[in-house]
Image (cartoon, rainbow, N blue to C red; front, side):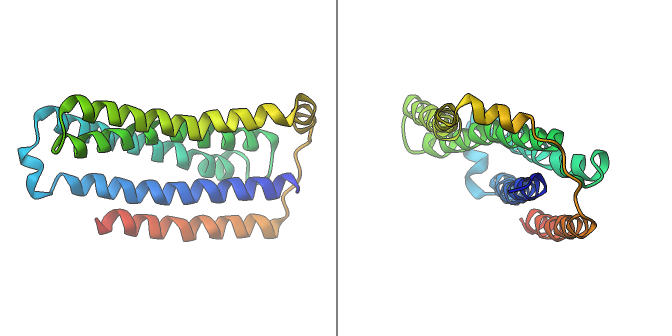
Amino acid sequence: MGMAEKIKIGLDECRMLALGAQVLIGFQFQGVFQPRFADLPASSKLAQIAGLLLLLASFCVLIVPSTQHILAEDLRGTRRMESILTRCLDLSLLPLAAALSLDIGIALRTSVDDYWAIVFAAAVFIAALALWFAWALAARSRKGIEERMMAAQRKSEETPLSKQIDQMLTEARTVLPGAQALLGF
């Protein structure tokens, strides 16, 4: 698989995660308008705001690769773009895990003791980190140093114009449903 194809797949992954983040942001905004939101303690309301900010941060990190690819890389598949994609995908998962654990803690706080809500939310956060990061690191360590060194020595490939046009159209097709999902909430 060539570098251009890997970058296309990575950008598609970013787009799908960005759409998912937009839906979660919509749900987070909608939570404020629920009838029982006013009955929540102030700490839960602050956790709701913190969760929204974390989801927004995750979304912002997810849109970086697309803009980088268009503006700085001129829609070319470069080693630098591959590195940016990997870093942004990894970095976006951390605030997402924190936001999900905060939301679970808020939801559980209405039905169980505060202590157990915090414990369960922390367990969800740790489980998410373990599944998303520890599992990937374990798989990466099995791949071997030689394969990573060979990947680092790959040269950037020139992306054909037809692929550049296809990637630009995909960007346009992704922006509209995301905006509709966000505004729909």
